[in-house]
Length: 244
Image (cartoon, rainbow, N blue to C red; front, side, top):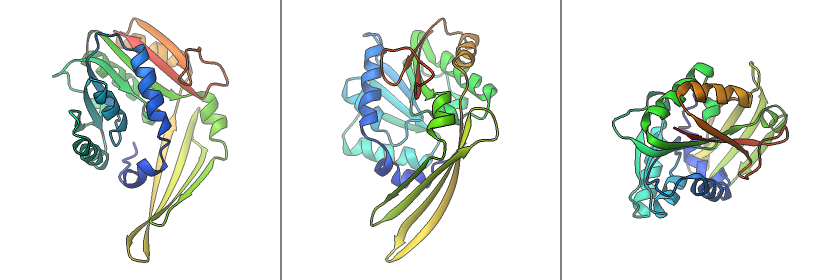
């Protein structure tokens, strides 16, 4: 799994801010009114966690990257937010605290190495939820992985850094490899190069449904691209709303 240690430094610069509002709206629309305590997996720099906290939820953001968690805490302190941020692995969720809802967005589950790891996350989430808890997540569609990232190239540059993103087909079905190159100014007129490889994969919707049911989830609904519509072959992002 990618560490995001370098990416964390410029993550907010290259991230599409409008997506956070979309995730917020999608979450609020699908959560029961009684939901109060939320665990956000792969919280990154904490933007969505803070938006949820501002709406009155008791939010805990968890991320594998210590750099991301550090930035999230700093952002939370600056906003005088009650949101909490912890470093942790979604493959090793603790059941010490139970939540009304668990979210995992930004295709973070596509970073799981295989179906076994994905099933492990689903099982951990199930155990982390209260009896009437809700699990909401999104993943890349097969179309996005195989067509949307085909020959994908993105370059972004400021006075302080340059960011190059190139994507290529992965070695297994429905997978992609993102090669990220950073040139970050760490001294005057001197840039240091960093390289990272991010590997993502997805599965047919039926595979996700099977693994979720095996974990214990009873009612599962699927949506496409932040809408109320069911997924199609052209959908870019699949959403799953699962009730314990």
